[in-house]
Image 1 (cartoon, rainbow, N blue to C red):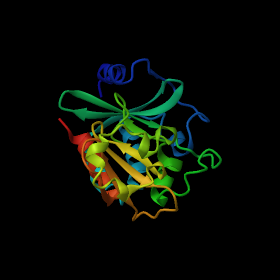
Image 2: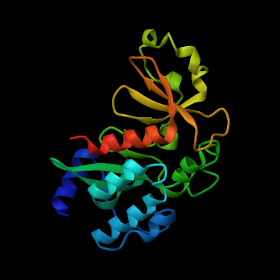
Image 3: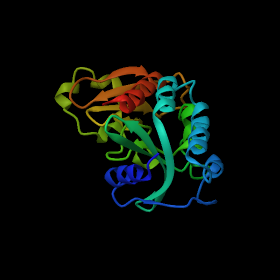
Image 4: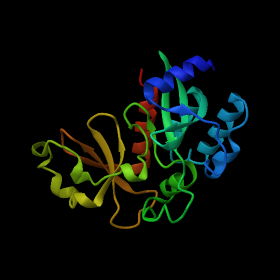
Length: 225
């Protein structure tokens, strides 16, 4: 992959981000074994990490395997990320994945998440997102917020809003970059078969299976032209 194209993609997507030489212990968990090899080996090792989630993200992991061109370690706004560079019709798209929450104390409070999502945060990424606007992937732990903090056209929600109360117990896990959000009810422990709320800012929300919805939206985000 052309280095100039990668540098241009990062500069446009995450202004101020810099490439770094990744070293332990800054790299957490499984990422310590990914870097230090050529681009093909880095990509293969990264895709192997994602394959452990392909049972819940089959559509996304399939398109990811086709489009991932390279990865790099970058520092942006004081934090270390894995930068993903995907082939796109006009250049490269850049996504960022935060370091996983390998420390159990730091991950405390996420135990009620669906088990595979909890493992995603602990083993793969604390947030994974399209760098220009922070969308199209599971939000980082401290970027999640209650549904009642989302600016919405409450008039459009009135017909069904009571279905989803209390909104302060519904936590946004994903933003599609537009009017759509995906939220989970974290009042109690959830299984991988959990339902989520698709919350539109301009029309009534609806219940939907969490993983299939997340998978579909992540795939759409990566396949847009």
